[in-house]
Amino acid sequence: LSLSVDLTNVVGDVVVAAGAVAYAGPFTPLFRHDLNDSWTKNMVNEKMPHTAHVNLTKVLADPVKIREWNIHGLPSDTVSIENGIIVSKARRWPLMIDPQGQANKWLKNTEKEHGLDIIKLSEKDF
Image (cartoon, rainbow, N blue to C red; front, side):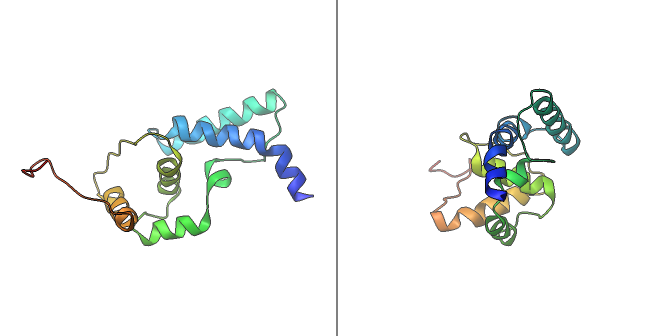
């Protein structure tokens, strides 16, 4: 029963997830919530099947991956998790404004095992 319901709702759920990955990144948590509500209301008006209270995290979150991100320094709050999902699912490189250095630490720790090289503009070989 659950699988057939999930298959019915997958189109609407993916619309919300794709919209969040493509558009929601630079916005505040309140505005992200408003965007999600707007998309959900439009799906109701168009009679598009979707899961109740659908959001980016419910559709694309992988609890094991999120735990790994937390271990690597990503904060466990909702916005940070959404940002992690957006960074991991987006096709383009994100611009991260990171005054506290949390994203910097998380990326360095996460990508260390993939051979990330850190360079600075001040280096002679840059």
